[in-house]
Each structure stands twice: as C-alpha cells, then as structure tokens.
Amino acid sequence: MPDDIPECVRSLLITQHGVLTRTQALGAGMTDKAIVARLRTGRWRRLHRGVYATFSGEPSRPALIWAAVLRGGPDAVLSHQTAAELSGLLAPSESLIHLTVPSAAPVDRIPGVVLHYSGRLAQARHPVLEPARTRIEETVLDLGQAAGAVDGALGWIFLACGSRKTTAERIAVAMALRSRMRWRTDLAMALDVARQGAHSLLEFRYLNRVERPHGLPPGIRQHRVRRGGRRQYQDVLYEGFGVVVELDGRAAHPEEFRLRDVRRDNANVAAGQVTLRYTWADVTLRPCAAAAEVSAALMRRGWRGAPRRCGRHCARPQP
Image (cartoon, rainbow, N blue to C red; front, side, top):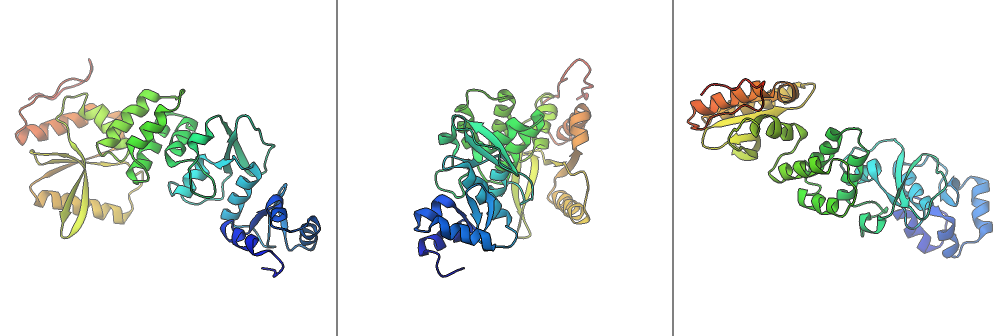
C-alpha cells in the first residue's frame, strides 16, 4: 500500500477489502488530483461511479460486495441471497449481488447488482454488522417472499432454524411487523413446527400429511441420543412405543450418508427400537400408505389409539 495514503484510510481499506469511495478519500484529506493520478496510472481502478478498488488486480467477492453497498449509499443494505451468503445460510458464490435501498431514494442501475426497494429498512437493517445487511430473520422472509412457490418459502425457514442461525420465535416477530406477506398462514404453521424441533420441509410435510391427518400420536422431533460417546438425532421418535421415523430428503445417496444411516438404524434396533424410513415421494405422494405402516408399528408396540381416515379416499389401516 503506498505510503502517502492517510493512516485513517489505511484502516478503512482493511475493513472494506481495499475498496474506497471518493467521498471517503476526500474526507481523509486526499485531493481530486491524487485520486485521478492513481486511476490514470492504474494503481486504482473504478468499480462503480465514485467507488474505487485501491489495487490493480481482479477484485475479490468481498471487495465487490463492499463496492456495491458503498455505491448504494449510506442507507443501502445487502439483502436476499447476498445477505444469506454473508450470514452463512448460502455458500459463497459469484452470483449477482442483491442490494436493498429505501423506496423514497431510488438508485441508478448498478452493474452486477439486483436492486430491491423497501420502506422499512430501519427495521430490517442489522444494527452492527458490516457491510450493512438485513437481519437474518428479515433475510429469510425476503427470500421466502421472492420464492416461486410456498415450498421454497418454507424451506428458507427450516434452513435458518435447522442451522441454528436464528429461531422460529425471532422470525415470527419479524413476520408480525410486515403488513403484507404471501403465504402467511403456511409460514406461521411452519414456524410452529420449527419450534417443536423440525429441521426440514420434509419433516413439516410428514407432520401435516402423515401424522396429524391420520390421528397418529405426536412424535418428538429431532430427538437427541448419545451412543458410543457420539450424539445422534432421530427425526421423529414415538416415545413409549420404540418406533422411530427417519426422513430422507436427499435425491442422491452418497456412500458415507448411506453407511451413516445403516449404522443409526442398527443402533436403534440394538436399543429395542424399530426404524421406518421415508423419502420425499413417500410423504408427499403416498402419505396414507406411510401412515398405515407407522400406525401398524405403533399398535404392535402397545399404542391403544386408532388411526383415522384423512379423507374420503384414504385407506385407513384396520386396528
């Protein structure tokens, strides 16, 4: 880094991954002439209007993200997929950067940036994290509202809660502050299930298409057990009956996952439990057949209840 850059700018460049605005440079005592000279000689390069990379190589992803939010202005925040990337909900990518700005202060088109507008950025903005971004609860709801179908919206809730990036309670509070929400009822149901410990959309579908409609006893979601000094989680445990339901939403089955599942099923049997395993197709396309199998296993192990039909065409198992 050149010695003639003011010390206060040096610390700022570390934070902003080598990106600086014209306003910041002038505020630190640099002159227009000094900025132009650096641009002309290639020591600096222009990323956006009034936003510069203070190096000559290709900018990194963090540098591009900083450049976008600085170009958006002091009230702009990173949002949607980019905020999810920064929070660890999504893996880093080279995709377009998502930026939300106030509705009352429109911004000119920014290359490589998807612009969103909001009238409630003061509520949505994270109070301390940099670069400026939406709170994770707001990010989850933004992504859900941008989803093409309700399953996509629900998936973001379970991803955020299942990864322990936030809680169902915090998302519910953020949702209550929004006057307009698509699929509000479905989202509220998903949050209720997430509070019970469900970590995936498939667990949600199992509860609402298999367990509840057919009158099965309530299971324990994500039941934690310790075996051989290692912690494991059972997707659904019917406590008192020794019946475990494992839900597998993977389209592919890598060998390491298959072996892990086999060991977990074997451990269940060794502990006196029986395991029933269902895929997405089982739960969404054949929920009544799954309910018949689960209820039969429960009745053989002492359940004194009786399954019920979920509708006119449901083939309820006979007790």
